[in-house]
Length: 110
Length: 145
Image (cartoon, rainbow over all chains, first blue to last red; front, side):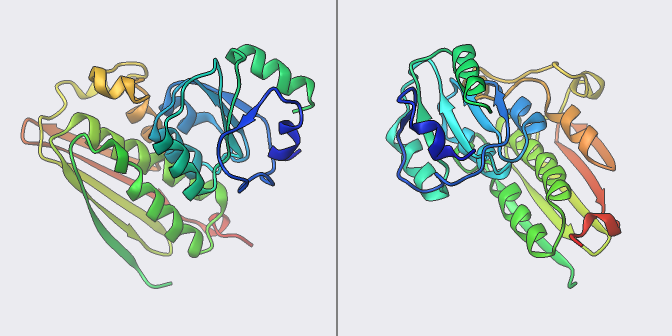
């Protein structure tokens, strides 16, 4: 499954440009502590987090994550969106809490 | 392949640029044909060490050397030093500032992560500074076939 495939549901709003939408999704990882993400997430994972700062992108880029989903309707500033566009990391937003986000993705077959 | 050696400066609290050493080293390792798993291992170690210098020290530098059979990385900062190395190596133990925690760091997993990914790690510290030396051995399996 690709990042663009989870956008069709209207649950997730894409806040970056169209690049990276063909990234292949391989599993889900949810955490708000970057060392846990760094030590445990794998290539192709979706990262679900409420942590909206520039370092999330550093970790996503180093680990080649497929995309980042900000749950709980977290505010994401322009600096992060611009940097994500530069790094070709798709950023998605959802009103759902983290657990609901995981369950929704799981129902989609991820 | 030719030996690679590069020195990086790391500024105190420069969280926006943290990850530069890891990112540039990752690029070099990929260029040399190393496997994704090996590249990830080294990247994790360097990233964690880089963050440590940014959030805990007054600044420092890092020297990355890559040869056909080893990646050798030394981080040296200018203080204030680690009070108790045993505690610092305990998963979950943290002395991180509010600033670091707000930025998603300070889980107390940095040094334990480095220990688990590196083949050899030496950590020495005094008030004048902390030196972290890590080695990652490269064998035939670490290269893409």
